[in-house]
Length: 633
Image (tube, one colour):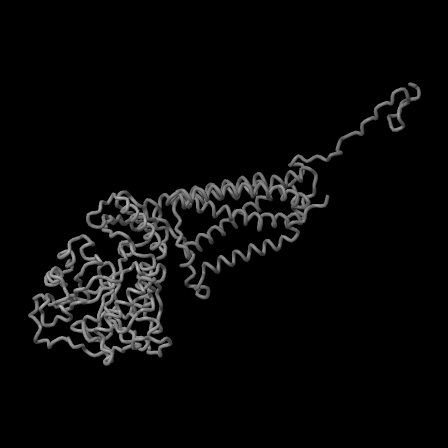
């Protein structure tokens, strides 16, 4: 029977392997392909918290008033919050982050390689977005130094105004986009810009005129150190729209006090972030009284927010409303635009035309409503940095947390213990690899070169795959994951042992090496595939039902099992096929590992005799039988 010819051209398989390695390299280098000085920064494996420094934060859920933290609804909300937080940390590219619940009302967040402020800002942000109309605003006189603006609220420049363009869609209202770049009261330029993509024709900051309630001359200002109140001469808006409770809070509010919120509201977020009540707040050092929130974050499309770079280098955040949000925001903008916007001056005529975009009780923008925004899309414009825009879009993309959270404990993790364990794990891997190398050369001699080369190729593919996952999928390698990579040494060694033993059996049976390679491969590959399939299924099941570090072990085990199949099919088998054509291996040299004498091969006719035929009954012996001496006859 002619030998099988399934791999008569091993060069194709080796070429496919080379292409795979090049593709992985290009994927790792990414945009730094032509920047060699940046390459070293790309070939870094993400490290888990157990082998790297990082932060662990414990958050306590604050359920709505008069609701027990152990109720079924709160537990369901806690699970939802865990999912949202996990999406946020993964969406932000935090390698190896874990989010776990700790009953009845605690969530633990562990993120390697990040400082406290980065983690707390991301997972501690409830993302309760409110759109509240400004009812009253007045400068705060208790301090000459205004309260610093939150980092997520940049101050825009006139260059951030969009270039006016003709409207491509008819609108029942004058086609002007809203802008917060005009002067208003004592606050000067305030916040960002919100526009609708359908509405065009921006009102320039330079053209914005002071409204009818512009600030009086400085001589009319109260004395320094006093607090502005609802009856203050510089107050802008309409104090009569405030409830008595809101008036009292407004008069009590002192924005010069860093702890102003705790002073007037306490520590319960339900006191200041309830959409059904009016609220007071501070923004850029000024005092604001805000109306109920008729538009909330739940009305945004999940995944509909994105950061966008502008030609002037600023970053904006695009928003998309769902059906309910489009209707609600359209109604709010219609009411504010019709009642307060001065179309003749292209500027707001009252403080009531301003509205605050409030995130977790803190305004991130106070633009005015200079258009009817009923298209379902809007843009928060301003001088965001890329990081600020990405963080805000990421928080809004994954929805608002159903519960408010208060940090209970914050811990910075040292990498010292993990580094010792990492060194021990790497030492174990090196020792195991050396033992495999020694065994391969002692037992398989020349074939040991193929074994070591297979292990090297498998290690290279594993390294590139882990780096690629770290760069693009925020993968972080933990100690358990390293254990999975070490186990892969045994998986790869098992595959070439199976193939080599099948090959030696074929040679032992008297076949030539070239024929034995093909026959042995047909028999060995089934065993290899079955073994790797079982290993991969075990890793998949373990990954599905395990958590945290055990998942990391299962993932690396499954990854290296797939790599083992690739190495055996695209490297080990083709290389053996090529070596079988050489004189050293094909001639079965005694150091090749295929020496017939060492394998115990025997020729089927060596040392044998042809058996004598059995005598025929009643007759002479057959002519083919042994001859006898005539004298004996």
